[in-house]
Amino acid sequence: MHPQITRSLVGLIVAIALAGLAVGCSSMKKGEQKETPVSMGQMSGPARATVQRLTANGHVDKIDKEMEHGKLIYDVEATVNGKHVEYTIADSDGEVVGTETSIDYSELPAPVRAAAEKYYGTNTGLTAMKGVEFGETHYEIEGMKDGKKKEVTFDPAGKRME
Image (cartoon, rainbow, N blue to C red; front, top):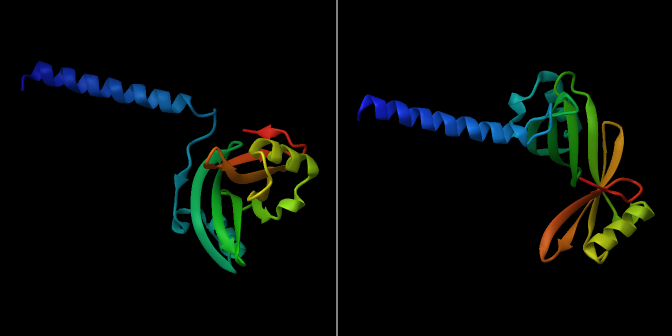
């Protein structure tokens, strides 16, 4: 191939790659990064010790690493004592900065139940999780809507969160 054509093709490929990178980076909030799956062995020592302690009566299902609130954290999904739980663990010191646990639908605050029933059009088949992350409480409700499994999150007052 002619050297001029080769340089042009390489330049075009680099331009396309840089454009894709710019679009991907601009779609994320400042200071945050996409979740990256990691293994227990790839976690920091303090975070790994915390996860091992928290999941001693169960097993880890999934670990993702990401930046949240300016901190490198691990989102850990596990099954402990037969229940699904999620933990947010700080990379730096292993601090538990968040938890999500399954709760009975009846345990939801009344405004959250009302908002969920309005969203789904029913209370049948809905499951709930209570989460506390970085000091803020939220509720995740999962159920069927428009023939698809959907999850929606509310604050304690029943206001939908994104």
